Figure 1 (cartoon, rainbow, N blue to C red):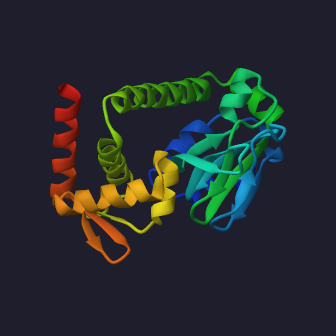
Figure 2: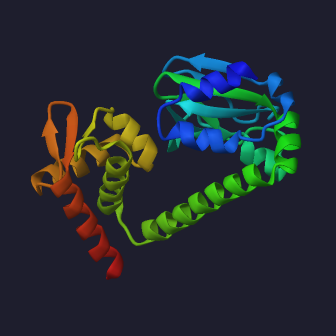
Length: 235
């Protein structure tokens, strides 16, 4: 239990506040939890493996990927701490993990046996309410984004991707994408050729700035991207 509290106390803000609220009434059985640290680019869960544990991300970033029969990998979303993996499967009674998860940065996790998690959450109404509210908020946001995508072509979808990336990673009103074009292609579902062509178009229109391999989005450019997307949707 002491290790669990110590790990939460060392988590960055605002993760620490959320985790303290979530684990406020966790029972003594939490001694079955363990702290796991992982380096970047480590696959720690694979789709179709038995879902026997909850992985609580308390520090770092993780991406979810779907591995196709062809061998292609489709990266469809990214998560930042705090986040729970295996939770949806546990609530749904699914006995295997649905997606493959890979660390983007060095990460720290609290790993809890699935039975311990379910026993705890059944008896902790505050923790259950907190998780339901978090999951519903995310579901509504994803539904909104899915509806938005229906109205956007490939170039416009890349603009939306840029605004979402800015909101997650901007510092001092500037966002620098230091990621490979292949990763952007995987996350948007487009070919690398389409992504490169669309990024050049964004740059030519002053909506992003290219500096070598880096893509830079200023606050002004972010506002312009939002305005253009709003116009596309409203029409």
